[in-house]
Image (cartoon, rainbow, N blue to C red; front, side, top):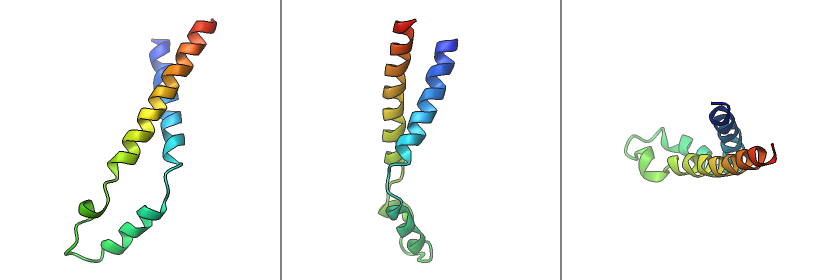
Length: 73
């Protein structure tokens, strides 16, 4: 149980750390499209991929860290 909680906490922390590395500039461009009703936002930017890749990288790094911590104890 302690291993799963540690893995969850590390995954969230590293995922948010990797998410902070994605540029903010494309997100600012979205605000220009909100005033136009003809253009849908989802056609211009897909914002799910940065979340997916950041939490995938966070999970991989967290699993390596948990493995190293358990191996050293």
